[in-house]
Length: 431
Image 1 (cartoon, rainbow, N blue to C red):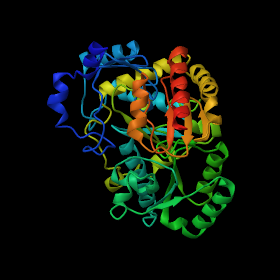
Image 2 (tube, one colour; image 1 turned 120 degrees about the vertical axis):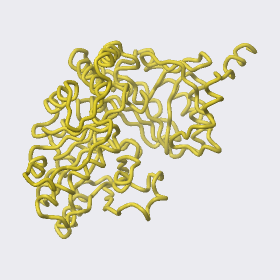
Image 3 (cartoon, rainbow, N blue to C red; image 1 turned 30 degrees about the vertical axis):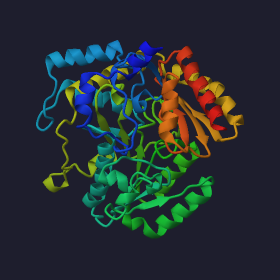
Image 4 (cartoon, rainbow, N blue to C red; image 1 turned 45 degrees about the vertical axis):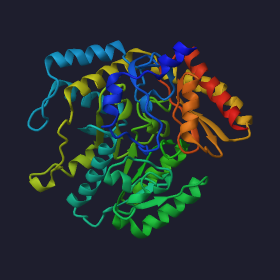
């Protein structure tokens, strides 16, 4: 036991030397629990520097959809590294990016034909908003400068993305006086009635609004809130009737997470602009895409240089990241990912079902490879996260929810371990 304690408390030299110089996300650095040093990853496992192994229940913020270190993606990145790691995308293009753009537009709903690459989901949202604003400027409607978003919606941490994120989530309320103010609508549990009010509002104010932005079917960081397919269809109708560009933020929901390649496909609805990231590269390299319809793109197609979209991230369409994304799409084509997601959904329903009878649980819900246990409250997030690690799993609850978003390739045994630990831990909370 003493040897094991010593092993678990040992930290590598790079950890002690570097920890004083980093700034980690979503944490008060003074009071936070120290982050865990990771030595390697494989499949659905995270191996810590002290030798402990954790089953990853959230696939690194749901990016590692094929599991860690998939050999096909690794070989693709290695091959691209030998050929060309990066080249600027201004005045130059390369095969990986053009191939990826063609493949993405073939997978997305009809009409989404033009791909603009960037490096992060938040920036992809910024670009989508910028596209929408300039679309109307180019069409001679410069007063359409506002956006409509929704309660529980989260779209990123950069300035524009914060402005359409529900401040009640808590992360961005401190910036309320310094970011643009847009309409954030509470759809509640009666989307039909609330959407009627949305339409009435836009009937009066449509001339001021450039677009509507929503995470279709599942609002992720805002509480893992599930929304109906009907809501998505009604928003499309309202956007068309009130001259609004409809933006779908599928950074979380895209690439199979909800049970179809893209969540909007379940509603048979296409947006005017869609944002993608997270699982785009299978959790290997940063890459994002903002994809617009031909109609949106046509407003920028002009002899007038002032009508061009003047935006260009330095590492836009990075060749290594595009190679990883192409390899990830190969895996969706070659391996039974959607069948795996369906099987995970059934296992989550079955494995988390006992939580529904526990006193602290408000709701238990599953959508595709997303399992959510919503509690009445979580008093000590750090303690709860630590309790999961003690039991050999990496699960990172937030707000009042415990959630699972595992790799699609997770084994039955590993998934059962995750759900068993969640049930056991939630049961302990009743005390």
